[in-house]
Length: 452
Image (tube, rainbow, N blue to C red; front, side, top):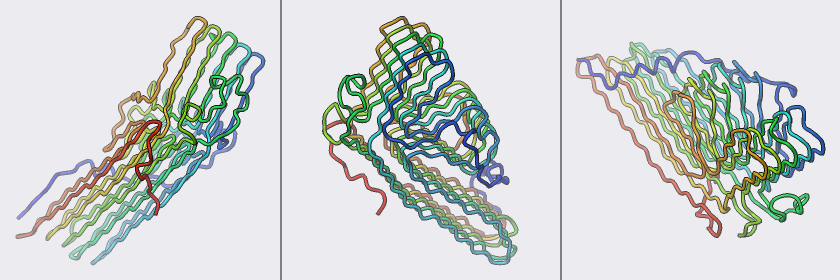
């Protein structure tokens, strides 16, 4: 007697060997991974060369990390990343893979002021608590995890087991327990030059950019609390976990088990228990404490991108990228859990798969965006505020593109075939999810706590 449940051809591709390792890059290759919280830049003359001004941000250009295996780039963040891989053969096999993660990130104040007194004749990137990835960065390559995070909490856990137990029992137990909390407190500070920046007030959590000269000869990218990926970055990249986040909390958990013939009996237990909490708290409930972006263009303005608490994917970025979990998030709490099981035996098969997820997002501030074009606009201008702009055609089992949200994504996939007379297959799949999202001034914390 032969019984089969869900012929999963995808699993074979997912279980092909993946290079495991970390690439260490030089300071020259990594344009800037900075963790400062208050930044002021004053350019009195013309800007004739590419300038990066990065505050609490991850910024990568050129061919950095192209073809690289596992990479982690973080600024003002906490991250837990764990991988267990087992390939076992024996008469009776018991595999236990467990990841227990707790990460708590706390950051006070994020403030950036840029003053350009002359003409802008090249590219200027101004990033405040953001992720900016351009050109061929992280293009191609095979990886288990690719992480880029600014002012965030990250938990990534992956278990992979391949088991053969000829004539015996294969018992596989895979568990990811992840608790990740991110806290951003907008406390009182003295703005470096309140008469010039942020509406002439002593504001917290503000990005202020003033262009007094002729801006038409350059290209300016201004981002606050945003993820911005452009050109061919991350295209054609194979990564089981691909994470890009700013001012967020994320958990990514993957369990993959493959029990192969001629095993007699298979028992597979897979679970993801995930808590993600993201708190952005204002020191006082007024307009001086908010994620505010002000762009003041006094002269002619060329191409300009302005992103505030947004996800902006453009060009060929992430085109033909593939894997299991893809997350692009800003100002959010995100859980993504995936369980994949494949078993071929002569006798009984039992598969238990579960995802228990709680996502809580509290943003106690408004997020106004002000763009003033006093002179002529001579190039395309893209202004995104609390927005998600996806691009490309990535192929993942779970894709999350989000801002200002609480998100739970759970996937259970089981493929089972038993060939013996009277054999039985039992599959139990459960997802338990709770999401809370509270936005705006004058709100109170709904109890967003992840780490015990």
